[in-house]
Length: 101
Image 1 (spheres, rainbow, N blue to C red):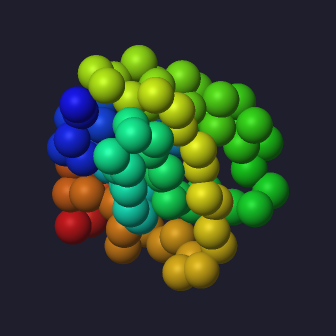
Image 2: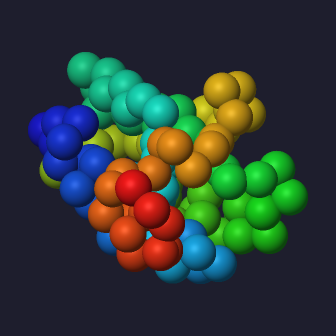
C-alpha cells in the first residue's frame, strides 16, 4: 500500500492553476491519514476561501490519491485554520515565484 511520502510525491503533480506551483510545495497539504483499509484522508487548505479553482483541484486531488497502490478511497478535510501563508511554501516554490528566501 502507498505510504504518506508516495502520496505526497503523487500530489506534486497537482498544480494550482492560478499560481502554477504544485500543491505540496505551496504548503497546502497539512496532513495525510492512511487507514488500514486503504482509505486516505487529506487534510489541507487553499490559498483563499474564494479560490476559483477549489472544486477542480478537489476532484484532481482525490483522483490522484485513489490511483496510488492499495488506496481504496480518498476524502478531503478542507480547513481554514491555520490559515495558509507564504511561509508554508517550500524554498523551491518561493524561488519559482520570485520571492526572496
